[in-house]
Image 1 (cartoon, rainbow, N blue to C red):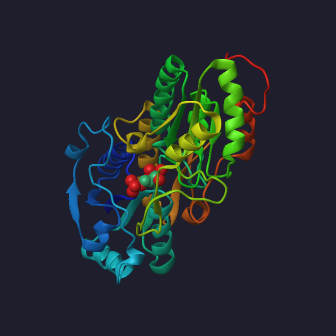
Image 2: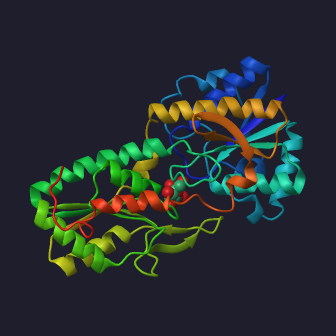
Amino acid sequence: MRLAILTGGGDCPGLNNVIRAVLFQAVKKYGDEVMGYLYGWKGPVNNLIKPLTLADAEGIFNQGGTIIKSSRTNPYKVEGGPQKVIDNLKLNKIDALIAVGGEDTCGVADKLWKDFKAPIVCVPKTIDNDLNATDQTFGFDTALSIVCDAMDRLHTTAKSHDRVLVLEVMGRHAGWIATMGGIAGAADYILVPEEEFDVGKVAEAIKIRKKEAGYAVIIIAEGAKIKNEEILKDQEKDSFGHVKLGGIGDRLAKALELKTGFETRAMSLGHVQRGGSPTAFDRVLGTRYGLAAVDLVHQKKFGRMVSLQGNKITDVDVRDAVGTLRTVDKNLYEQTRVFFGDEIKSRTRV
Ligand code: F6P
């Protein structure tokens, strides 16, 4: 067989582990040839392709990013784009394509499968962990460990200066990074896109927290909203229609300072969360996904996505993974409220 692989959307640690596993499984187990499409869906649209060999897999196991590059190209927003993908797959004699990506990349794969019966299988990726039909995407664990480290550091400096510090993390529509990072990093308030928040309420909670501990650390997802307001860096949209978010942390810090009189500062972790070496968990998950994706191809189970269910790798209809995002479990978020000052009138840090 002649396989191709592409990585689309925002990069994340673990992509190279998928590529490495695909190469080993395809070449060593099945005797396949492997091609890499460059820059996500831009590759098959513009026929940007190169052969991949086992030599390309050498030493990439601990490297972040993706050796075949990524982009947010949407073939359905390019004139004749879907047909170009199909024509280029034929031109390059590709028997099957492995598309590694999140909601957008897998959404395109789903459409191409539906519209053309294109032989595609998907691998779920995103630091946001917001893809449906899988318990976890790779990249999330690494992002979380970076956020956790930042929280640890913010606690010590906030405590030394009796300050309130606000950490803005990624998460457009789902607050998994904020929620889990907030739990791991002992946040005094967690703010997520799933629930609009009232600055006054947060201020009251922080006043209680200041009285108890002298300082406070807040974590907020970039997509969190003050009432109905969305904070946009600019109005520019990518080809999947997403606006660039950012700035909610600063805005919250200013509003809190006004309401409480406490010195409050904000920082945004931004793309630091997507960079660098993958954690052991993400290396293993990416590897398991890559191995399973090649098996799926050989079983001709196209239109499917590899998925983690419990501790098992299985596969699901890619349609089940796209369309609606997996948002933060309401019960889990509600449980974290016990750590917010507004829920408990008197406590000491444990
Ligand atoms: O890939 C997911 C993600 O990191 C989101 O958390 C974030 O909102 C977005 O990508 C940022 O995308 P870009 O790097 O294209 O600005």
